[in-house]
Length: 97
Image (cartoon, rainbow, N blue to C red; front, side, top):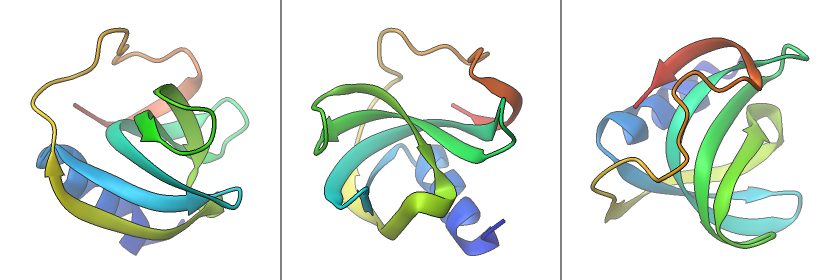
């Protein structure tokens, strides 16, 4: 596990900060909501994607595939509709909003 990346994302979650990162060649911005291990034991982030890739909505990202991650100055005020703190895609939730 990349401890620095994990802790940076957790810090962003705690401060309701938007993150930006490169994933599968696309620059994306997202509101991080939950981090944990998916059913295939990948450390993953569940986030509301604001831009990049396939548009807005909840997406899951493997942390090993996230690059150039930065916490932005932009914040969000609450969880998005459809957020599930007990996401069934996760076998183990480590941190959640």
